[in-house]
Length: 138
Image (cartoon, rainbow, N blue to C red; front, side):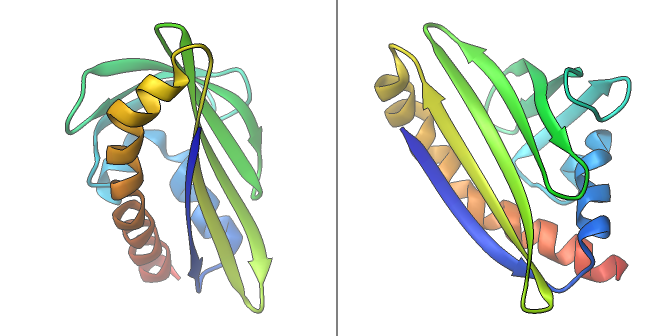
C-alpha cells in the first residue's frame, strides 16, 4: 500500500536537498515533525529518530541517500515496514518533489488504513512547508 503527493518548487535542487540533509531542522518546515535527529552524516545506512506531532518517537534508518536526487527512510512496525521516499527531479526550470510513503509486509493493509491515510492527508502541508523554506532561501 502506498500514498504519494508531489509539488513543483522554484529553487535549486541543492537548496532543497540541503533542507533534507539538515535532519535536526525538519520541524522548521514540516509541521507534522515534532523532533528529528540523525547519528552522524546524512548518508545511506545512517540511523536516527523521528517523533511526529501525533505519534511516538520512532527509530529510523536512512536506507538510501543519493545527493541532490533522493533519500529513503525506513521505520519498522510490527510485521510491517514503513518507507518514506523523497525524490527530486528537474522539470521545466523547477524541481519536481515527490514524497511517497510505502507500507510493506503482512500487516501493511492494517497500518495503511490506521496511519497511512493520516500521513497522506499531511503530505500536501509538508510539501508546502518545504516549498516555502526552499524558495525563501533562494
